Length: 201
Image (cartoon, rainbow, N blue to C red; front, side):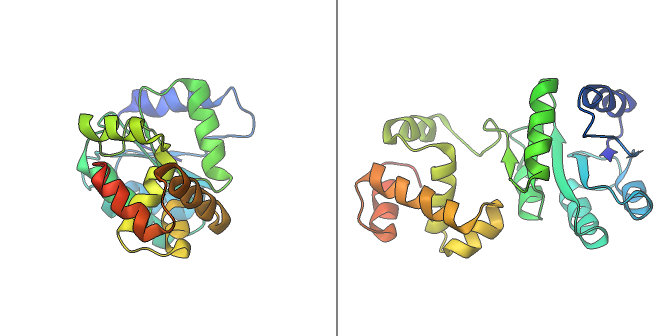
């Protein structure tokens, strides 16, 4: 289901997804309230949700849709990658976020990954500044390793990190071990300290 107040976006997504027979647009909505009534009728597996709707903010819509259709995967679709609303929507339970300038083949691939249970966030969206980008490049950490380490620094346990990123627990463990190795740390406390010193946290 595509939720966007611009008909051209709704039609464009339907057109792009035609290239993949496994993805079918079952319906659309132009506002948060319409999405809530239509989700019960359509029962979609995946909802592509515009960040800026005329009647509600995406984080509110995400929360409501998750209550109404818990099995659905929700991906925020936006032209505003730096918007705080993106992070709020992810915190509210969205399973991913893509920018509207994504190429058609990339959109199909990303949506299929979300349906497989992965959390997909366009790398241009993560909160970033030039300094942190440079520090990340110097440390050799991947975006994913950094994301897992950042959540560990916030005090989250491996199962909690797995829950908030949509990753398997073993995958979280692998990313953390890899981050520790790259930072030359023996444990997560030491890794957090070294990441802080490096200007990463």
